[in-house]
Image (cartoon, rainbow, N blue to C red):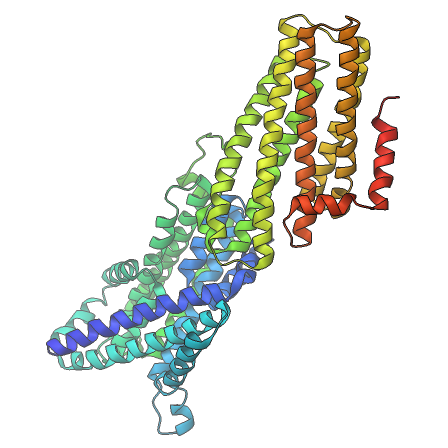
Length: 581
């Protein structure tokens, strides 16, 4: 083996790793949001989680990608630690599909039909199809399909290049001696773990081992410990991904590591005892690509069979290693790992906007209650809720803008716009709740009271605003178009009620029933109540627009009011209910 063989080996390895990375990324995109959404939904029990993890990993060809997604889901609260364990175990078996595909390169036969199964026979055709799609396809899905074909072709060409480069190693005694040394189980595990940690993929490191097996110098006694170590090395990606996450996400990465370490220790012990006692002749035989695929699969199946029934113990171990520290989470997490899965990220955003809406609406209703009964503790909660909604708006706005930069469907783009508009309105509703609270506190500090007539009028508009908040909140949370259509007629009535109350205030000023100072507070209250109703109207119209895939509030308001008998009917009903005679 000379310098040119070494250069060919380096080139082949680079092509192999590049092809595997390209194919994996394209598979992840092409699989679409449906598989990833499936990953976050179908985890009701251990078995379902296991099957889901196995299927998703088999499709996207990367247990590391699956595990990183799971860490992100747990960090965001989409998935519990218990649900994640089954998926991680399934991912370990799903990743063995790659080694079976790579083992096709070891086929040798004079039969032309068998020869056609060799990747070297059909990858040129796949590469041709891939480059044609990449050059002429218009849609992103077709381009992703092209990258899958090109990535697969590249990694197979890389494997062939590596095989050719290492063929000369078979005649080097030092190489043979190297793999005799790896028959030491502990050393073999360390080598497998380090190699996998470096290339960040157990599939890639198994592929490299399969190439080396072509030399005939890798015995089964050497490759078994290495394969066990590769499972440990693949945990590095998840461990790195868990840095900076919450405790449950870190526990998920710990479960992944514990699963592979415990499995390796148990089965390495069994393997060492069997090889020492029985000394099977097969261990001294040269391994093959197919044999390595079989060992890889059997080992992962055995680990799962051993530890799936003990998933609760793994969970307890992770909790012990990452204990609770009594830290309180102010708002829910928005994990940037989910941005690679737009549909899941969007669902998470929707959940958190709902939390924000709950904070805003409940705090405003609390401020209305303060008009009748003041409470220091409740006042503090209203101010805390306003700080929370400010923070919600900041993190959600930033996250949604990042999300919109990804490739989204038209429907998802509309949902992003809907959420961006809604968070602004809910934040302003929370602001108005504090404004109402400050008006209440000013009345208390200055020992001012409204007249009985003014109190009666204020009760009427407060009831109307409380009802419009409920309508808009329910419409948003349940995406209820029918309820959304009930909001705007009530907003019109609140506008008229506001005008009527202002006129009543002016009349009381003229007769000296009301003071000018109390009048300032009165006007502030009416302004905040009316503007809150305006934000409720914005939310409702946004829901209606998003359902019709158009985001033009002014046009929607005009079309909603103009000659609409349903609108007029609701408007008259609200007039009868809230308008003071």
